[in-house]
Length: 85
Image (cartoon, rainbow, N blue to C red; front, side, top):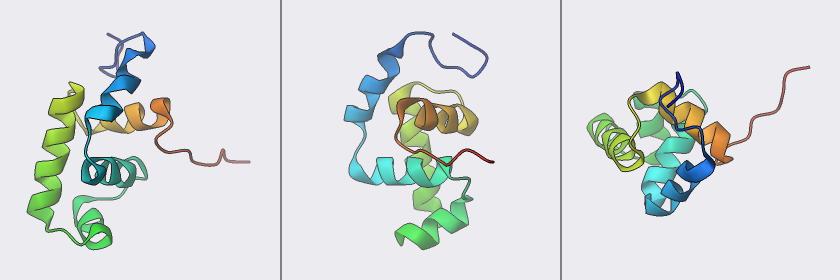
């Protein structure tokens, strides 16, 4: 495992198949830097539901924290942000 809590191999991308559509949507929002209350507003969920979904994502992907989930999202290509100029 590296410092981000992700394995060195590319096997983590397979975990995306285990996520529901709602979990993928929350992960995308999380990777864009949105806070729970912002994710709740965007996805029409309660903050409590967002927290529960984030916990489900961490468990399903065997990640230790939200930062690892953000790195995972970027490394697997679930979200792509433009590079700064």
